[in-house]
Length: 336
Image 1: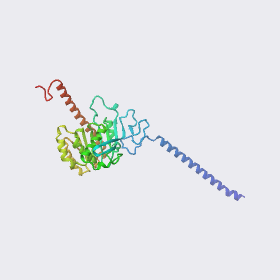
Image 2: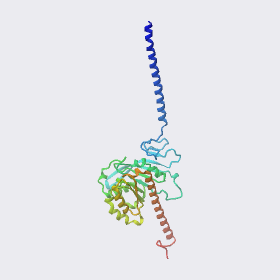
Image 3: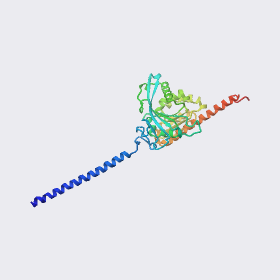
Image 4: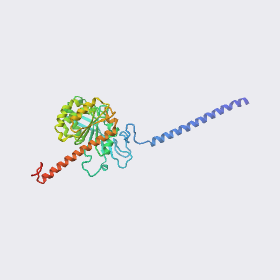
C-alpha cells in the first residue's frame, strides 16, 4: 500500500508542474497580445514604406481629417503648406483619333501660406514628366511635390501613356513628332496651365522635344535631366531657339558624371539653348536627381525664380510702354 501511495506522489507532482507551465505560457501569451494590440492602435496614421525622409504622408492612406480620398495634406500642421491630389485627366487627341486617360498628381500650395505683396510670386506652375523606369509617384516619393508647394509653386506630375497609372495607348507608339507635340499641348490645355516650367528627364524627351520645336512660346522654362533625342533634334533646336534668342527661354540642363554617354549630348544641348545653365552632378548616374534630391530641388526652384524674374521684366516693359503711349509719346522713344 505504501508502495502504491509512494508511486502516486511523483505523478501528482508531475501534473502540478504541467499546470504551472501552462499558466506561465498563458500569461506570457496574454502579455504579448496586449503589447501587439497597443502597438497597432498607437502606430502612425501614415505609412512610410514608399516615402523619402522628406515626406510624412502617403497617397494610399485614407485621411482622418475629412479630406477626400486621394488627397493628402502635410501632417502635424494646423496650417499645412499644401496638399497633393490624385486624379485622372481625359485628353482628346483628334490627330490620333483617340482619347487618352492620364493619371495626374497635383501639388497645390496653401494660398494662406504664400508670401503676399508680389503679384508675380509663384505664378508659374511646374509640370513634371518622367523617365522610362519611373512615374508621377517618383516625384511624390522623392519629396518634389512637397518642396514645390512649400515654395508656393503649383505642380503637376504626369503619368505618360503606358506608365505609372496611365493605361497603354497603342496610337502613341506610332505617333509622328507633330502628333506628339500636339499631344503635349493638349495636356497643358486640359490642365489649364499657361507657360509652365517643364521637367524633362530621359525618355520624356521623346514627347517634349517635338513640343519645344513647335510650341516654345507656351513655355516659361525647361529643366532637362539627360533627355533622349538630343542628336535627332539638335539642328532644329538651334534654328528655332537661336532665332528667338532675344527672348531667351530659361533652361537648366543636368546630368550625372557617371552617365558618360550624355556628356557630349548635354554640351551640345547647352549650346543649342541660349543662356542655358549646365550642371553636372558628381558621382551621379543617369537619373541624377535621385542621387542628389536636395541639389535638384534647389536648382528647380531657382529656375522657377529665374522665369518669374523674366516675367517681371517683361511686364514692367509692357507697363512702361503703355504709360508712354498713354502720355502721347512714341513707344520707340517719344517725340524727340
